[in-house]
Image 1 (spheres, helix red, strand yellow):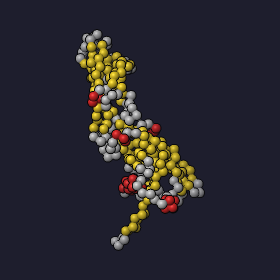
Image 2 (cartoon, helix red, strand yellow):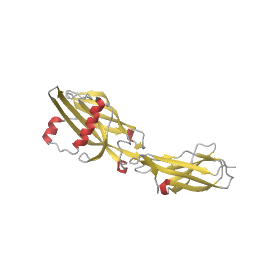
Image 3 (cartoon, helix red, strand yellow):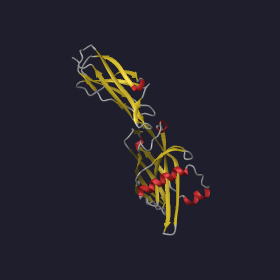
Image 4 (cartoon, helix red, strand yellow):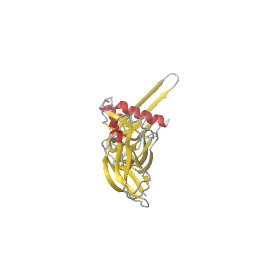
Length: 277
């Protein structure tokens, strides 16, 4: 029931974006909730691939009137992430379970609590296009529903409110890199070719696709060492293809490193070992 109530709250929020409610009605039906100190994913970017659901930790402080009972069944309050504006929502995600709140202060009229929750992003259900890889906003959502039912009568009264611009969260497309050095083994002084591929999540296609025109750095770590050093920078070609050559000097590991972009997360290839005779 609680998850259904939360889902109804989110659906109501989407519907709310297209409804202009009278100011007087909003003033009388919406409690004075205050969401402060909202932090999403500990301030780090949220990186999402093509299939795995990502649970994003959110912390905040919620202050409510003492007579408002947020039980998760008839009333829900929590933080959502949305893209666009509240007047014109482009996308929105929220928690799939109730926040955990601990009371930290009370007055004659208010209760203040420290809250944590997990906003859940399922790339197969929640992300639809490249435009979703951007900075999202955090909003505080409140939804309530009162119902009366019998064999002869059914009445449901529900309402939703969102307080926007409470924080931000960058959502990025996950990336992958490969590296393959050859020939192996190789004689010292001979040419080594290191090939690879840079791909990133395409949420609409539910697959990783080549990321071309991006700077990628080839690195080398000698056998017995734990430290990689830059060798050269190259640019990914058609379909994200990577290929460059170096002179064999000593045995060790070659890998490619991608620093990331605004829309796409950084990534590293696994080191590929090559023996130099």
